[in-house]
Length: 263
Image (tube, rainbow, N blue to C red):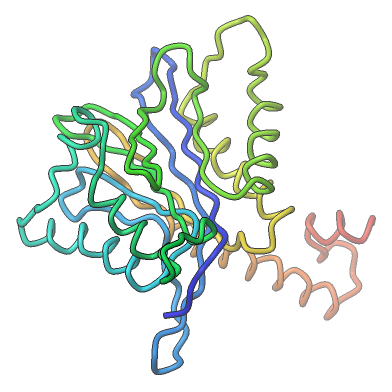
C-alpha cells in the first residue's frame, strides 16, 4: 500500500433538549492501491463490529498504520481486545500503543523523526451507552472533546482543510455570539457534511464522503447509503438532460433543467 496523505474528519454534537443526542462524524474517502494493482476505496471511518466505537485516522497512513487501524477492529470482532480503549481514552488519557506506532512510522532511520509522517485519530465511543469524543495525538496524549464551554464541533486534518471546515461551521452556527448555541440532529448532520464539502473546495486530497451517526443506543454507518442516494440523484438529473435533448416541448422539460437553462 502506498503512503497516503490528506484527510478531513469532522465531528459535530447535537444538544437540543427535546431530541436524542447524537454525534455526527463525517469524513472523506481515500483511494489505496494493493500490491496486485487493483484500486479500492479505504474508508477512513471504521466502526467496531460490536458498535461500541468508531475511529477515524488523519495524517500520514502507511502499511503499519493501516495494520494497527484494522487490528483494533478485527480483534474486537472476535472478542479479543488487547487494547482497553475505555480505560486509555477516558480514564488514563494516554494511548501508549498509538505513540509506539507513530514513532515507528515516523522514524527516518538515522535517529531522527519525519514529522510529516505523524498521524492522529478521532474516537467517538458509546461505552456504557454514554457518548464521548476523543482526539489522540502522535505523542499518545488524549483530549476529550465536547466538554462544557467547548465548541460543539471537533476537527482533524491539514491546516487548509480544517480552516475551511471551521469557517463553514462558525458561519452557520454563529459561535461568536454570546448566546448559547442550540444544535439539533438536523443541524449536526448537515453541519458535519457541509464542513466536509467546504474542505473539498480547498483541498485536492479531500475526496468523497463518509458519514457515521452515533447515538447512545447504537452506531449507524450511513456512508454507503449516502453514496447510493447521490448516485441515484445523479441518474435522475442525467435522465432529465436526456429528456430535454430528445424533446424541445416546454411541458416535457423538468424543473431542474428549466433552472439550468434559465427557461
